[in-house]
Image 1 (cartoon, rainbow, N blue to C red):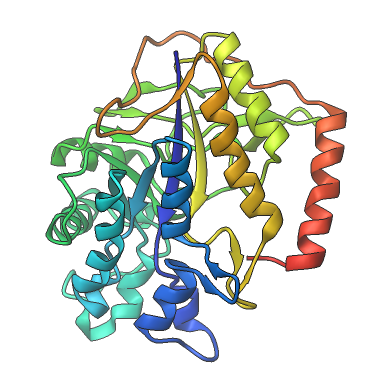
Image 2 (tube, rainbow, N blue to C red; image 1 turned 135 degrees about the vertical axis):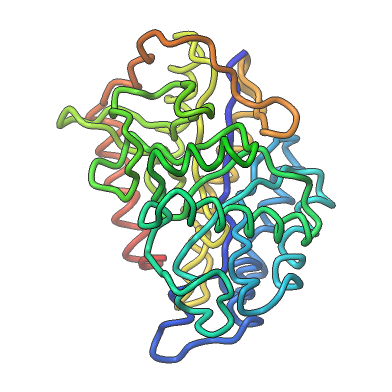
Length: 324
């Protein structure tokens, strides 16, 4: 049985805090978490409803760092509905909030775009604060982590191990020029024991230029996502990880639902429910298995037809709904 992890990075927007017209906490929540639109909410409650409708599990990686500015209640508003729906809450961390907090930042004067910009001791301090805040907001003690922007390095893994977190999923082979600094190659696509934790790479598919494309809801078509899961199942891959975000189903500037991406997410939930030999999983109940240090399964081979259809779909999506 191949385990599929639908992971959702759930976070307030630091960009909305630094825009020419910065928004308050309530507006940030409405645009980034609840995703309130004239057509109704399309954020975490909408995704929770879809997951429940199709009987699927997901992992919500929640960033507690905005509590530096708004207090723990800002994180409780996120954690509460997820726990009530029976879904899994794990730890996320965007270090951009350190600078935004200004005098309210009691974690020191250092700031940085990514967790990898900090040394080991600083990362331990940041991760400890984030974990304590997430638990204070009502989440169970987390066992898994993903860095904001995937911006982790080897010290991040060592810090997680020191704090007792057993899993990281910041390694993203499908993004060649990303922020991740973990010293694993792009050929590592299956769970691996590394620097004291089990690293669970984000899924990817092969591209026509010989590279890889990451398995994000906004990056792959529904056809590509299901083909990737079938490929993983048929080749004995233990797990496959998808990435989404709390705000991905809308355009936050226009406050409009992106109907193409919304149909894509619902279609993924519906198709996975009907797919034999596959089950959605989470880190709380059935975490990824490290089965050895052999070579990773090759990603789904590229298809000019699938790629062409996705390009056409993306053009329509961007034309009608614009960027996130």
